[in-house]
Image 1 (cartoon, one colour):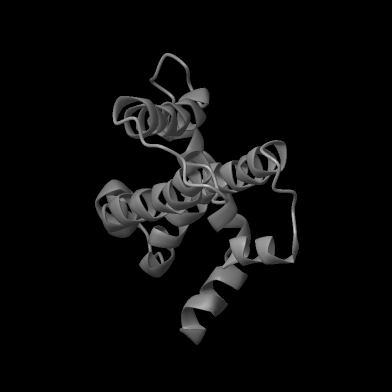
Image 2 (cartoon, rainbow, N blue to C red):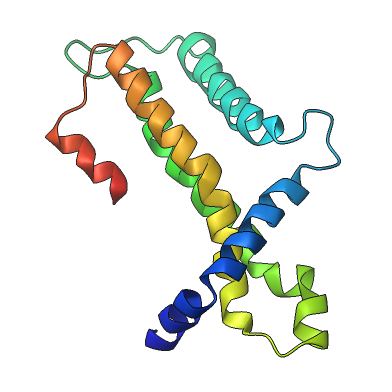
Length: 148
């Protein structure tokens, strides 16, 4: 573990550059470009909200949080976990040109993918706080748990 942290610290410029390039490259061929990274989770949340609230006609219980707040509090971390797991496991195959050609610390490749996925995650964490605030639940001490 100490060795991975040391490798990350010594190669921090390269790791940040690889994460930035990975984020840009992931959506380079799509019509919306980088906006697709933000549109896709929003559409997913709205679809789930519509199906479970309007489609199933789920009544609100008195005094509880609205369903959409529970939904985004659960789905936003899931989006990061899902993206990090799927792209992190394929990182060695995707960056095979680095692994085969050069002497390269392959330990940092999954972390590059996680850092690339966390860009969208941090944006949605901020959006989640804003949605909570507009729905009448302003930031409090308990929202520091978002970091966890």
